[in-house]
Length: 424
Image 1 (tube, rainbow, N blue to C red):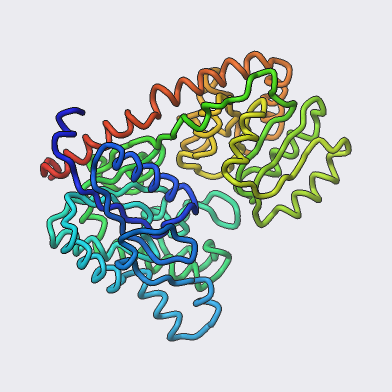
Image 2 (cartoon, rainbow, N blue to C red):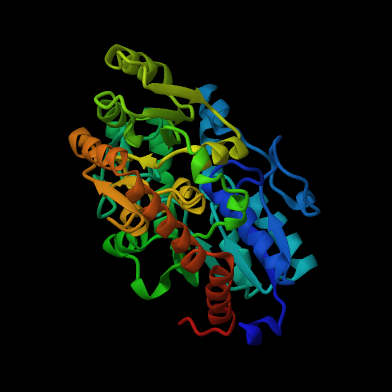
């Protein structure tokens, strides 16, 4: 690592959004801080947005487009304009070229660019001989809906590039127009071969890497590099004597997150309460559903909370439940729970089992099986020492394997590999 530090690099970080919006932004700001702490120069390219943080490079950002509002107009010209912008953005290409000519970055590290910035920027990066690494935060390259979901259920109908399915099942926002545009965008990018311009694809989970290979991507161009988390957030961890009598769910309240399964599992056990933090399309429905089943009122819906508030709830709970019923990639909610020294009960789906290791850092259960989930909740309820022990293991897992130093070391290895043209 010391040898790699001899040459400080100028790294171009690219992401659609430049504010705290989701996992891609969480990683963007974390890796930006990590690179800067190690004396590298970071150049940012993004899209204008009302909530963006300040940036000295904002003069190069592309204009903000609210696709939801554009589509509502139901105007043919507007629809075609949106469709073309999602496939190829001349503004992104031209603005980035101006930024490249001024800053001359050594490498481009791409995050989430679909629909707004678009892979059109790859052409100008290659023109200037700038290596490209791309950290994938979802399944967009192999699923037009980005998440393998259709009407709240797992769907892989498009396997082998059968991208007519989105038009038939309206998997994107339950809208024909949105689904059609997603399918056309995905098809166009494959025909254009834009993904072949990328030197290395980085996946946070082995599950995502395996999925890409299963769908035809070359395995030698895909590397798994787990996300990391700043364990300092737990420096003021509450003493175990102050742990409250509840367990916690944090996340979106929607069908694929397994909320209904969680409620079914929770209402049969009154010895410990469940706190649900988050918002989403099913919030009101799930509140009503819980009240109709939960006669003892042991389930509390707390709504949206700030990140700091979420961390405080995690510090105070006995354990965290992640009951997802879709292919979660590498959830930050689990990393945060681990950093707070909490064991996690997680469903055996997607990348969750790579983090929640049975009887080590938590317990797993069959997705959608409330009886199985209930048995795991009861195990921790009657064996709090086991929950505490696995929580300590989880904290050590973060400290030893998913820490900033280890992530930096491996990221520098990838950067060095592509900048030295070792990729064929």
